[in-house]
Amino acid sequence: MAHFNFENMLNEVTKMDAPIQSGPMMRWQKKAAEAGQNHQNAWEENTWKRYSEQGTEFIPNRATTDMDLGHYAIMHDKEEEDSPSKAQYKQHLHDALNKGQNPQDAKVLSFKDKAPKAKEGHINNLKVLYSSGRVSSGPKATTTRQIPQQPDRILDAPELVDDYYLNLLDWSVNNHLAVALGGAVYLWNASSGTISQLCEMTSTDDYISGVSWIKEGNIIAIGTNSGNIQLWDAGQQKLVRTMTGHAARVASMSWNTYILSSGSRTGVIRHDDVRVADHAVAHLNNHSQEVCGLSWSPDGKLLASGGNDNVLNIWDTSLGDDSTPLHTFTHHQAAVKALAWCPWQPQLLASGGGTADRNIRIWNSATGTCLSATDTNSQVCSILWSKEYKELISGHGYSQNQLTIWKYPAMTKVADLTGHTARVLCLTMSPDGSTVASAAADETIRLWKCFAVDKTKSKSGPKPTKDTSSSLSLMNRGIR
Image (cartoon, rainbow, N blue to C red; front, side, top):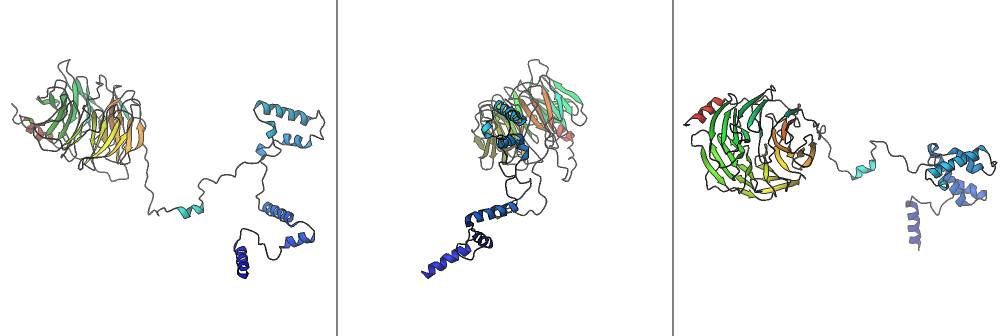
């Protein structure tokens, strides 16, 4: 039994959160025993005294204490019936009943319910035991940036055709913004702010269904309702040539150096070599309805086409009438008009669906897989990738008619740019990548400076544009 007693004594010694049962009496206990007091009561009195010295007793909160009511509650037996405190207590009782307060809940003293909160920035050292953060080797990178919520400029666009399938806005490498208004094309010089009319349809029944600038130079392709494509030299404001062959309107076009790809309402995609007289070099037939979206990849190796048949096709550079798509995707549940290739990863393609779909999908064209799908809750009309940030911007219709900036690859919403009162139809980006222009059915064009260039990075001057005289001579060669 001796070893059990030793173990009990050892537990009592090592157990520091309880009084030791055996051992010499404390000094205050000896004095209490000599005075004939109970040990427990003396311990409680000593404990209260010790806690009081440490300042942990309850302190009355004078801000919420009713001193008059407390005085009456203590002294009412000694007060006369008509004393001032009696009348004052009645008034307090009346006020309490009117406010819905129970008079029985009134207290002589009022105390705070909870301990005061720690000051802002207070760090609990105990949490260090459960944290595993990495030590920063330098200043923390900025994760947010200021995005203006108001447009930098608003331009009037009267008679802008409210048609989801048309592409009526494009920005040239020479900083000229082209917009089709009804049967005419207007140019806005973003550098000087001047506006000029480039051309106008001769027939009142004909209208412009698409515009597309060449990658380098002043040549602009204009698709019409009759199925013709006109090539204009914007610098000289001169019609260079007219290419025929489509049986219906041409709403989508995209350049790949001297090859112009165009899609018509019949679902046919045509490749035209603008250097030669016999311009039609290939026809692609894999859409059953209107081709409303066309986009060549930045490296010029792949062509993405979207149609009103809810089909997205990716084509390679092999030209021929019997060509088949490299990939065919049927994931979208509505027309696929919004198409954009990633500028820093040419194999990445973003596509957006119409009202019945509302999804933005990211595709890997090398493997033919869908990397992500994001429900935007509204019609997607256009998509653009930022050249400065790993973000993309989309234009939408009902119900907010907004532009939305998304963070890639998480596809989390960065900001909504609102202001249009009708659905956004087209988006285009300035040559420096800092400004996005949006054309909407409210007949306005709004310029949003949402991708401003970071000033801390090294600045490089604008790339010199190529001389268009050689391209013009090539285009005129062989024309009869």
